[in-house]
Length: 105
Image 1: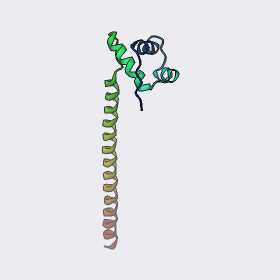
Image 2 (image 1 turned 45 degrees about the vertical axis):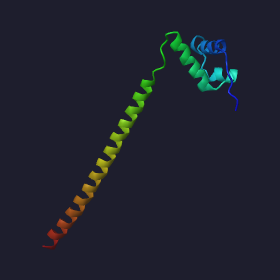
Image 3 (image 1 turned 90 degrees about the vertical axis):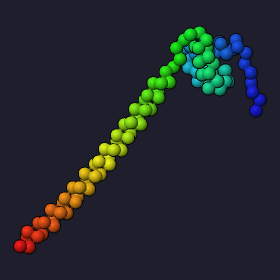
Image 4 (image 1 turned 180 degrees about the vertical axis):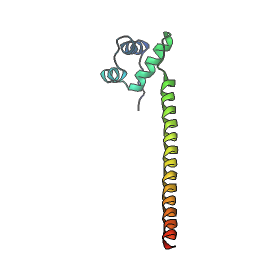
């Protein structure tokens, strides 16, 4: 597959459509028949070059971390619940055995 080379003016104009005109990278990519990831890379380069703030990837990482932690907590609580259910069943059986012994006396 042949790699297409785009000139810097084209990259900048595409980036401006996303950054300044507020169009989505996906829409611009479709309109100009360019890969969406390529457009996103151009936009990030444009933002860096012009001293603009990049999207917060750390926020997404923090969200993923929170989800993982909550998932761990949920699994732990599920295991604790299973353990308590087992304890209850054991106590019920023990109570049933003791009741039998008392009724036999």
